[in-house]
Amino acid sequence: MAEVVAVCISEEKGQQKHPIAAGELVENHGIRGDAHAGPWHRQVSLLGEESVEKVQKHVDFPLLPGAFAENLLIRGLCLYTLPVGTRLEIGPALAEVTQIGKTCHNDCAIRKAAGDCVMPREGIFVRILRGGTVRPGDGIRVIETE
Image 1 (tube, helix red, strand yellow):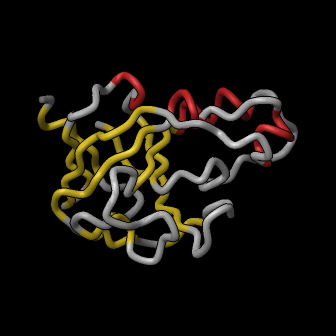
Image 2 (cartoon, one colour):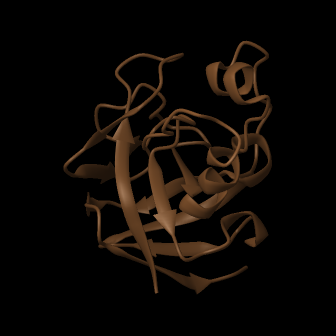
C-alpha cells in the first residue's frame, strides 16, 4: 500500500518546504499554514519518493523532504500516471487529482544544483474534498477514477 513519507509546508511562497509532524488538510483549502493553500485547483502537491531518488543519484547533497516544494512526499504509488479526476484517500482525508506536473521557474534551486527538477514531470496536485489530519505513515489509496 502507498503511504505518506513526509508532510511539508512553507510559510511563504518561493521557499523550500519543511517537514511537520502532522498536517491538517482543510476542505477546499489545502494544508493549514501552507503558503500555497487556498480555494484553487492546486491546494496540495504530492511527489513520489521514487521520483526524488532519480534526482538524488545525480547530486552530492541530500534531497530532504520538501526540497521540491512538495506538500506530501509519498512512496508506493506512481503518481504521474494517475489521470486528472482520480480520487485518493490520504489517511482520513479525500482528495481529487486536478493537475499532473507544472511549469518550473528557471531559478529553481534544485534545477540549478542538479540540472533537473522532477516536479514538473512527476509531481501532481490535488484539491481537498474532505479534510483530516495527515501524518507520515498514513496510507494512500486510489478509490475512484472519473
